Image (tube, rainbow over the protein chains, first blue to last red):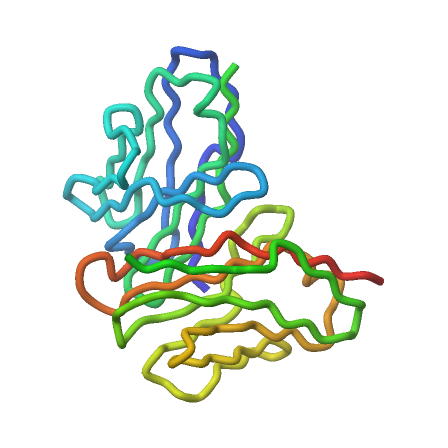
Amino acid sequence: GAVVSQHPSWVICKSGTSVKIECRSLDFQATTMFWYRQFPKQSLMLMATSNEGSKATYEQGVEKDKFLINHASLTLSTLTVTSAHPEDSSFYICSASSSPHEQYFGPGTRLTVT
Amino acid sequence: AQTVTQSQPEMSVQEAETVTLSCTYDTSESDYYLFWYKQPPSRQMILVIRQEAYKQQNATENRFSVNFQKAAKSFSLKISDSQLGDAAMYFCAYSLVSGAGSYQLTFGKGTKLSVIP
């Protein structure tokens, strides 16, 4: 099956700094990538949808200036959490898709902001 | 807007027994996809099974099968011969086939399944 990687798997950063998370589709070209946030024991919350070469579409309530998403190629999307604060600590998951009925998930990134 | 409801926050099943997880959804569309995803403690999301709404036949994947009731907007997952490795969070999800947002998944809140040895 299709493989999606995320890097890093776990990152600790200091409050006020920025951190970048990479999402790569390793063996297919993803026309669309998604970024989710998941709090402990909760479901996945869609943050934004990105299509290669165009601006990301953010869900209501998600600050686009805080969560910068870049989808530079058909195999790479990045999420940058700018000026991170402790409340941004969470589990971030990306997924990649080339068709509506197939979405492949990365293993997730645990962000801890101290 | 589409919504997905999983009314069972937690379920448990004896090893080798059968368990059914419930899911209902709300949509005004006639063509869509429904999914069950498994999230084990590793937190890697794994696709368990997928159903296309225009197909009347219920999808099956080995020990996993669904009962898709389109009129009732119900999509339950049956796990037969439960194994310890089936213990996980299970999420029901919905997506459109075409149009705006057709690639997006709408998830339910999940059901935590425990398997008792």
